[in-house]
View 1 (cartoon, rainbow, N blue to C red):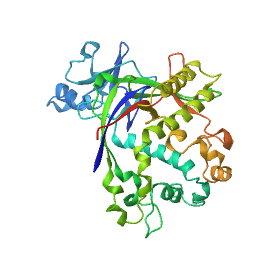
View 2 (tube, rainbow, N blue to C red):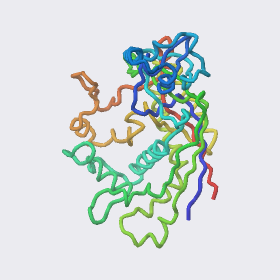
View 3 (cartoon, one colour):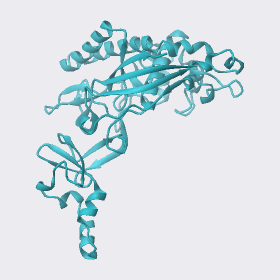
View 4 (cartoon, helix red, strand yellow):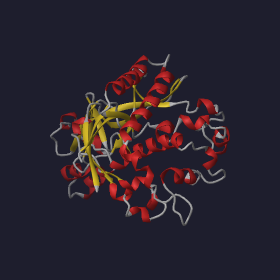
Length: 366
């Protein structure tokens, strides 16, 4: 009763899925000759610390990176975890999620979240929903509960959305296979508006061209006659899961067209990237593009632009404080939101690539 699907994911642009930790130069890593050396602090302590209390106390007051000489920085050194090409633009960079052997992978939850957003985008049109389902006055975390219930399923007793009655219970997504540590790189990222870029931050990210595999299953038992005895589960929407590649291509086309237009007159490289995505979507029906991870933004994590056609959009926008930059008194007009994008910039500070776009090849095994 489980439909098996194999996914192959190819990273199109630098992909950062973070641990929430910012690594600091001199403590977590050192830079030398255009490379970044990630330190193994436990191994370094074992190598350098002695039983002499005074000497050990002196070492503890010294940033670990200052204890090393240039000749100590080599990939095979016991206190070097791995080496990244390039150096961050500042004195910190955001760490990417990796397995215990420092190999990058993509959590299944990151991909499943993106697929969930695609279904919500499709349902908005298919079910002719509106922002009347938003709980005006509710806290942000609860404001969309009724809208989610309309799309993904409603607990018949409680009258609201419930994980136990959610359509995505039927979609099982594993974590990906691990890539190699050499597939990681350092990238400088800026928040970019039509007026220019902001202060850069550095991220550890998976390099374009890296491939991963996922195991995916659709539990058909949840759409059977037997399962129909339970109220609340959206049985009739199982076709949305089976039709996900087509829905994802439609969503990718809509987003890529809008992003290409937004970047027109700002960056030829960004326009070219989204033009390539649109070209790939036209050439094949065996895959689709989607954005995941850091830099996805409001457009990638919500239904996105279709919400702005609803008559209630200006009121929702105002009530929940959207479009207000940190430390700014001004606000982006509702029809121009979102006014910024996070992008990878080159050494010249110009936009080079968006973040987190992947190409997904979807193959049904049985």
